[in-house]
Amino acid sequence: MSKFIKLKKGFDINLAGKAEKKIAEVGQPETFAYKPASFHGILRPKLKVKEGDTVKAGTPILFDKKNDKILHVAPVSGEVVEIRRGAKRKLLEIVILADKEIEYETFDKYTVSDISGLSKEKILEQMLTGGVWPSIVQRPYGIIADPEESPKAIFISAFDSHPLAPDYDLIFKGQENYFQAGVDILKKLTTGAVHVNINANAEVSPIFAHVKNVELNKFSGPHPAGNVGVQIHHLDPINKGDIVWTLNPFGVIQIGKLFLEGKYDASRIIAVAGSEVKNPQYYKTYTGASIKKFIEGNLANDHVRFVSGNALTGHMIGSDGHLGFFDHMLTVLPEGDNYELFGWIKPTTQKLSFQRAFGLFSFLFPNKEYKLDTNVKGEPRAFVQSGIFEKVTPMDILPTYLFKAILAEDFDDMEALGIYEVVEEDVALCEFIDVSKHDLQEIVREGIDLMQYS
Image 1 (tube, rainbow, N blue to C red):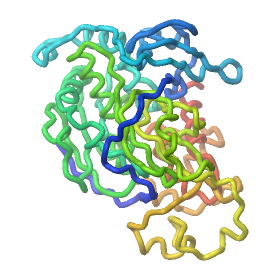
Image 2: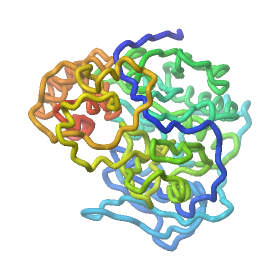
Image 3: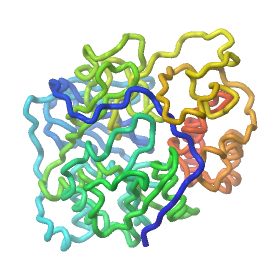
Image 4: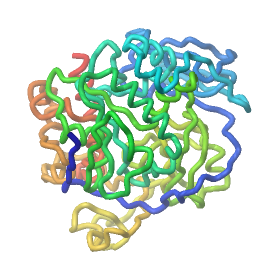
């Protein structure tokens, strides 16, 4: 049965530089990169290509020795021009010089009526070989789902509440048939429900309004209302031994395209946003695109930070970097490497703060847009127990005690305090408002890894 959930805890970060709702014309990026670091849990990556090889969109390029059935495939066709490695030869990126016209590997093609008659085994085979499986994230732990497992439910968050988040109505426009086909496929992989969770404060997008075979739930409230982890907590919480799967709507659409069109289609629309972008807007491209074309002549100044993803959970990249696998946006922020004398005590109306004692009167102007830089305004210090984490975490967990249990490597307390229910994005707001300046997202990942591999 569909539910309506109203959340009161949280905090909206209203940044300047929202993308205008139009798709701009720009030359297609020359290179695209596949980043294994976009996925947690890949312990022993094994390449299936080398520099100089030519690939098509959908050609296998990588797998994990831990589960060699799950294939990672090329997002575009072209030549593999570089295999980038980091410290200890860690695989960072597989860079492909793209063809002007994308060529595709071909897979089995089905009609809508055919899908209803497909067996679970056939569905798994096509999804694993067709490259769409890595889009499915398993909770707990936030890792690529294990095809041998059967989830108790599948969750799809149909809105994004992060700062400067892209408009799902625009980036998924016209994909209704593919989304429905993807849902029908996923429904065969679970004995439970497929939950599609929408924003109760906005008009229902056409792509989600008439979807069938799902439980359509509504969520209202500030960020992190759009986080799938928060939604799971309020709909069907994860207990020890439970497994659920989560997807972004883009992943569902890719699954639908694989079965209806017989190809791996990584085409997507991304938002380029942020206060330092002259013309924040949307662009058509493919997964893993180089950002060069999108920022060329489009920056207010050169002293900026490029973030693949959103400002809270994204990853810093260079001006010649590529977007991550799950990212629908590039965020450009002022670089915060300056020192502000007495910045912590000067009254101002230009700073956003969760605490009313700082950022004078910012709470009185909820619609004001802020130009925030990347300065964390302080260094790590003793863990101050202020009680504010609980005010931005709309889940029945105790974040402060969970963080301390992780630092103490107390497995029993981690389990009791909710480690199975969270991943990094669920504590990103805690990190934003943390007066102690700790890397809380990193701490949570360390705790998850301890629980998973110890």
